[in-house]
Length: 291
Image 1: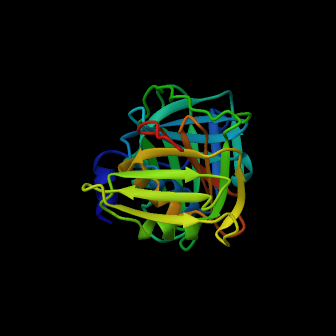
Image 2: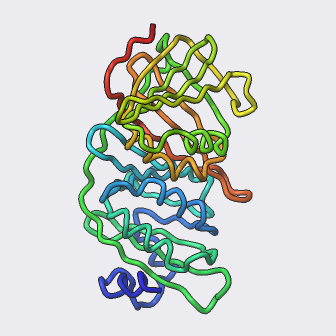
Image 3: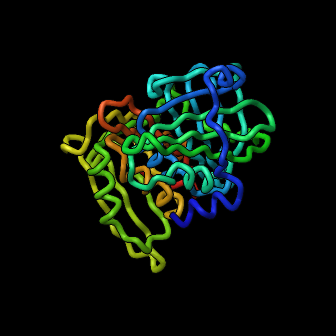
């Protein structure tokens, strides 16, 4: 593969003996997945910025990517998703996201197992890939790490009187966005206890509008919990950054309140594995009169 050659020339793919079990004990982070497909899809879904921050703890592994102060995406992987998960302390570091994605795709469509290791500050992130269809082949990737930059903190108040939550089926929501105007500059989201309950309006260059309405009784809706009407607008470029996650999500949660801050959760699952999910925070463009 051409990108394998490039990674090899950059020194990311190493020709060295695989680590022994005793050597694993020297690492701050050791985790193993038997199947790589969902992890790869999730990483690709958040590759919209150069660097991502990895944080590990007893609660699992987080990978956070940001673009300015307007959008943040975090991939959550719980310990139960891994076949093996060991962490010493709370290691955190940054890596180039495109390099991480390229390493995960080294064997193309072949199903692989992966072992992820990190020794500590200044050390590289090691990925040990072994395709299931060829037990004679394995690859080790060594990815340079840098000091972590603390991600922005976003949060919706769970006790807010205006907090609204919708759970929808992923394929249905993906189809809705596929039908909306691709040239739109802005998206306006309205969530209301009154019909049409959930409405998305697109505003184009000439201020032409297209819209989609979803009633809370729709088969597309799994849960609808609306405390008060909220209306907010967002840059279409930011909403479109959720497309890859939306296309592979089985379920999507949409949350917002009177502040207009948009929180979206994309749940992903492959075969009989536990769910992992990507959470997006998107800040609103401006205040919109909901009356």
